[in-house]
Image 1 (tube, rainbow, N blue to C red):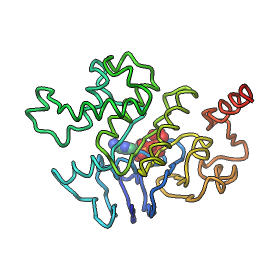
Image 2 (image 1 turned 180 degrees about the horizontal axis):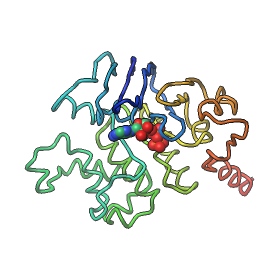
Image 3 (image 1 turned 180 degrees about the vertical axis):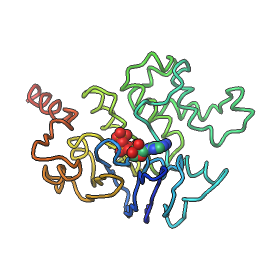
Image 4 (image 1 turned 90 degrees about the vertical axis):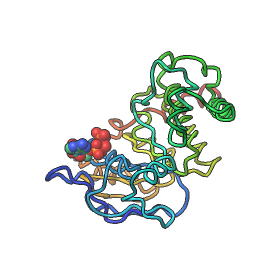
Length: 268
Ligand SMILES: Nc1ncnc2c1ncn2[C@@H]1O[C@H](COP(=O)(O)OP(=O)(O)OP(=O)(O)O)[C@@H](O)[C@H]1O
């Protein structure tokens, strides 16, 4: 499905991503972890073609997407929708219009200019918002929503593109544990129910273990771990983060697990 081969991105003398290769041969939810500066964002941005590779190839379903240009590149970008830590919504625009922005790549300049959306697209946008539990907020300005709700709007915008892959760059880094859980649950459900591949950069180990089928660990631009959540032991994590014996998992925790356990205790 997705084959990354010897992918490198250099910024001057610094290789942000250094000779990375891996294959994802079935739809899965993948977590990419690693310390700040390990190259996680650069990797995702290259897959989405927001950044160009210096060397190597990215192929999806046998098609090389590494050097697409113009409309072919834009088409690829809608096949692998990206969501970001800071949501990247238009704050003063209403929620449903933000979601409809997901169709920009396939609309004419004229209709974009005058905000003309087909009724069918408006219905689809509302259905997606409903699926994510935020249809009631459709007419509100995006800036009036909480962080967790805004991230769900961003996910809805991504789904509007009907992508095969969702690339999530630190999707919960700005959220409190409860909203982090809601957003991660939504991504997992989208993967399971729609069969979409999800690749998420995560800064916390517990989230990667809890939600992902496979975890890729990066350190200084290289892949230093590629395995299942079970294989991601504290010792392995220490190597990925380049930390010593003082390494504490708590430092990379969102407390999603603690929150889930607390809920379980209340309902038990
Ligand atoms: N546009 C750029 N110009 C120059 N250097 C860059 C640029 N983007 C990233 N880098 C460098 O590439 C390296 C990897 O950065 P990247 O943002 O991919 O890491 P990351 O693992 O996503 O980190 P974080 O978790 O802090 O977002 C860093 O050394 C960073 O300074």
